[in-house]
Length: 104
Image (cartoon, rainbow, N blue to C red; front, top):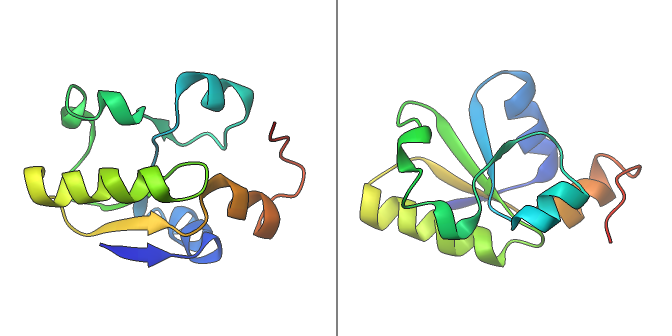
């Protein structure tokens, strides 16, 4: 697994090169989201079939800690690669890409 900056994540989205998975809890996603695939951390095992094995996978959460745990699970248990962690999560996305996001 590797870190990817919000800027490079945005480029990968624009080029349709990656699938971004938001692993935050439902209340966090409802409060503020960027429109990525939402699979809460606790549902990853049950919803693994929704994650393609033929695309770059970028995992994001609020700050990056949960994303790291999910990325590790996807690599070790499901042998999915490449897996990236959006550095700084949605907090960094707000800071570097979209300052209009309302995070509470």
